[in-house]
Image (cartoon, rainbow, N blue to C red):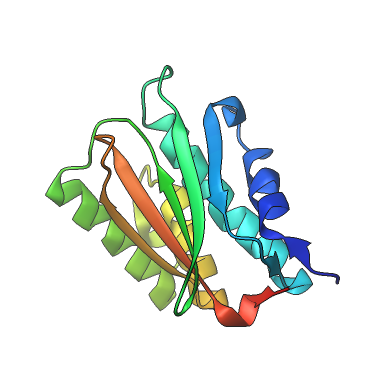
Length: 153
């Protein structure tokens, strides 16, 4: 029930993925996450980190930053993989939107990328905002906005 530093939350997310050694944390805001929000945030970040490591070459690094913004904390996860085409990005964001709208996981098709559906479902339940963009590193930048209600000192 006690607050957990954001740095520790992100380390917890890293510990849940196979390629955690490739993840670098930079400039993490010195805030804490409300105890009841820690597990959902770890889960959402772990899914995004897993996508970043899974869909980028093994020699590349995944960079994570977390800065305070007006609406809360912006956690940015950037990989150095192959960038998403506009069509693939639209498909991934559509899956996020469908999960936020409450689509049944069984309706996602034969071989869905469940990670995005899970992130979408968590973002709906905890008012997280997720967007995907092209990364300066050539890959994908996932931006997860954590609302102020989940943050404490």
